[in-house]
Image 1 (tube, rainbow, N blue to C red):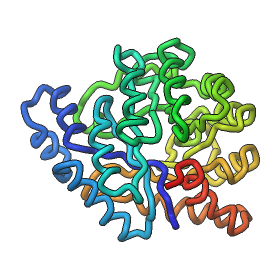
Image 2 (image 1 turned 90 degrees about the vertical axis):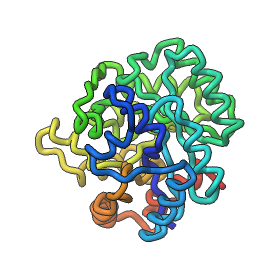
Image 3 (image 1 turned 180 degrees about the vertical axis):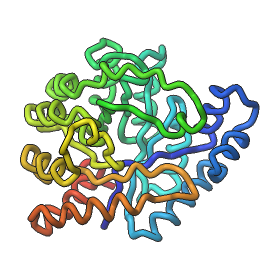
Length: 295
């Protein structure tokens, strides 16, 4: 069974937030500019995703609420299809209710991972506000912490001409290792192999055995390291953390594009070339995700 550890849930709430930032009255204007489908209700979008995943043989997927405050949308999707979706949600640690929202999302709403974007929200990973959010997550059995490090580039914002005033200095994987060592029973997930800070991500994961990488997206950050290839990324990561700490993901997000099959085909070809055994390959493409987020 194939599992995708990184899909964005671009709900009506997500597009409403973009419309507000753009200063337009209706999200339909935003959707028209992008040429994307109207998501409809969270339940309708959840059904759309199930239909899409079925078409590609994907059994389970993470769904990420992609703006702070939209956790209710993903919770509705998870409640509608609990066997298919694992809910992630974004928290801005600088918000006054960040800790309360974290607790509620991981308990009452049934979500499973809190997502931190330090460069976006400009709250350092060694800040007390971040620590309080992670502490609240660690108190919930089975909860995970997702931390976006390195390069942060959001395509939809570029397409709409919205500013992205991100402080990339704050997305240091070495700071994730401090959190992971402080909360050793909590799984930490670093997407895109550290998104450009690959060496630091490897160092962090080497010292903290509860740090995992998700393999999602095109990983185009490799252009910052001359000569680096995606094949080399996989082989190096496997040599440091092994197959038990890699989670396959695509970074799929909007319709009509839907599930990003080319990412899967590329990564499947690479993994096939690494010499992993069948059980190890299964771990990367489904087993590790199911172990972290059992049904």
